[in-house]
Image (tube, rainbow, N blue to C red; front, side, top):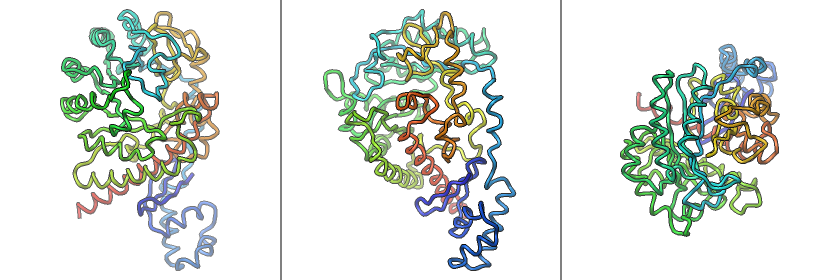
Length: 457
């Protein structure tokens, strides 16, 4: 399967199954789609009005060399492994601890209903949290590295329990030959010196929620009293990331229909001094006035292109930043496990409510159909886990002809369920935007490789 496109002056060819990327001249770009279906003589006849015969023969030979090297028109060698892969025994390697079903902001797009998750507000007790960590240890098999994300609501509203659980986890590491990687997602309202110091010592990564420019952020992420959250959190975030030496964090935002010029918000992050950035499209029902709609897709494409060009420019000027969706590994390619298992929700990754109930991931919390069990008794609804084990690109009809399928691994099961009532469908707008981001990410690699070659010369 071949995907070809032009972006920012580059002719790019992606061989989907091998993961090989080629930046080619115009004649090779024209030959590749034809040679996949035609003989060399037929290709020459087809393109004779545009190129000389000698040039075409040379281009065809280049295409043949790439094919023989397995870098063009490659077969999908993983599809045959799916059935065996589905039968594998999985272990739990990560938990999302809903440490607080409570929040001190009133974000308009919050899928968690301002922290309530379809139920009453609550804070996780230390006892439940310890049982959750015990459950993770007991169900992780021989895996040594385990991940725990403190999530909400706003986890800093239950900070003392967060601290105690980190210490509890550390106390169990040597005994069970485990190593915990703790992470935290916060809106920053309660950040202080003590919290920053503890996070710098114990949190492998911290996600800092901010939607960009002040007017954009405060429109969608106001305080409960309607006042600005931007004015409170930006100075704290700036101090925090400097104390972490600009590493092990993300400033993460959400863009909506109200800021389809979201590249300006990403650049605003960078201008504030943040270097590890992410900006996600809102996922909302079409009736919401801030929801992204199909008619917005072309404008979003243009915005990703603008952001990609500025990203390259700033990298070349020595004032670059990392943007999550432009980070792509073209050397190793998507690994087999990633191709076949996706994000691991419902099997390797689970969410835990303040009461200790288990769900496939944080976005399914409160959906009783997806209740799996609890941290005390373990997983009792194994049928749901089996369904998630089958959830991969080969189980999704929409993924079969999608060139980006091995980079998103089938997309988000929760979004699929929300829009189509099935975890093996796909959220169509999300797919469109993922394809564009992959195209931009590959183009950026090509442009920066060009720049490096120029410097070496």
